[in-house]
Image (cartoon, rainbow, N blue to C red; front, side):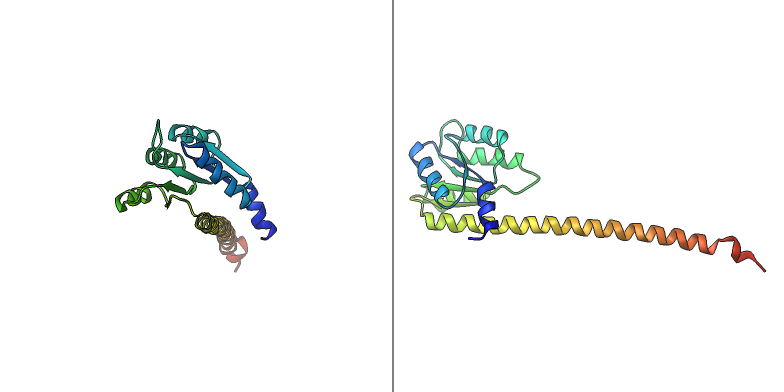
Length: 175
């Protein structure tokens, strides 16, 4: 792992949401084993929304069936709060029906069925990290293009002003 990848993992924030403490602990420890240092937890959907408001994260791993507020509703509320950037939500579910899986994809970004295969979880997170890095590169290139455009427009304005002065200058009226 490169130092840049390690640095990204150390500053990458993940919220693990599950009503069972054992499930949260298992996922948290696996994430820490993968190199992620900022792992936050919530034990229901309402607590997840509150935690996200207090401490916006980069990725949410969320159970579907929870008390107070289920994972689908919590995901919808978190998505409403994150308009400026993409915060992927991956559901961790024991559901086996296609309809339930489709619901996870409608509200969130992906899902994993229980029991969780941590090799697959790691691969999904790495794919998300690649996507986020590409998104950052696009934002950087967009900012550079905007600066180039601004500079070109300023050069056009200065050139037009100089040409106007040259064309209407007093020396052009000499016999």
